[in-house]
Image 1 (cartoon, rainbow, N blue to C red):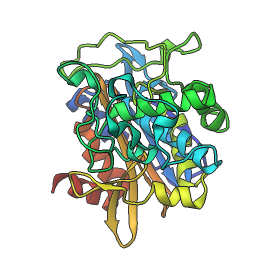
Image 2: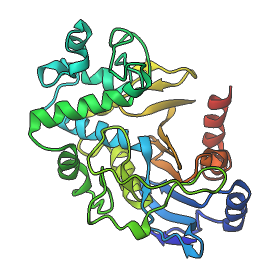
Image 3: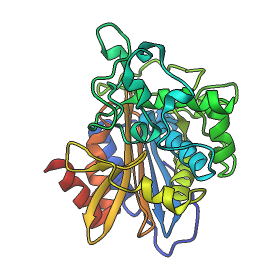
Length: 335
């Protein structure tokens, strides 16, 4: 187990290490990263488990966080909106149109707001379609349907307009200002592979690590608990966002299946008494991650795991660290 204290706290937030280690062993979770945000700051980072047999995972373990990539791409975009350099409701085709849908009139309707709230009309990935091509399954804005393709569409439009890669834009607007030195959309020669948490299936067999060399707007971000915690606290504290853009981001753009809503880039849980949580998860082979922030009370929780069924330990961690709010989130998910 590895640990980093980031600010003084009278009592340790992490007061039950043995119980967590027992939970990991019972659920066969090789590596677990936890970050707790209190009073608008990342207070502590803990990483439990091993990177491989006999090698303890360091506090700055690098994780592939799957779809936790999407909030970064969303925040790059919303910062550009706040700077007056991008428009949420301008049709994307002004900058870029995917060749697969260029003849579909829906391509003229698609906006950034549709993409960030998952109302594009696209499937998650075009590879899911029989012909392997992108199609509009409904008119943009008609309803919710989660789609990674939308975020890739947005990436290409941003790169065309600004003549910069998404990673360059993210570096300028987020990674460098927040000193997120271990965060990138892809692998390069600076990535410390010795600190990387290899993904596992639920039988304890490691997946081969795919070292993507180009950015995907929706997937495969490499980061640490500390880096992503810095990012979430900046979101919670409105950094680089106008009040109008923050209000748009946290407004109910569309209802999702569970009676939850998507805002812009984050899912929203309504917890009663005006309290709400912004959340996002990530799931790929050998990746299960989830984060929550509470902008009103300035709290948050990050959970990163490197195994297919890492979600099995979420419930215990949510109630342990978030108390009543954690239970409310579980109730919304299971009702």
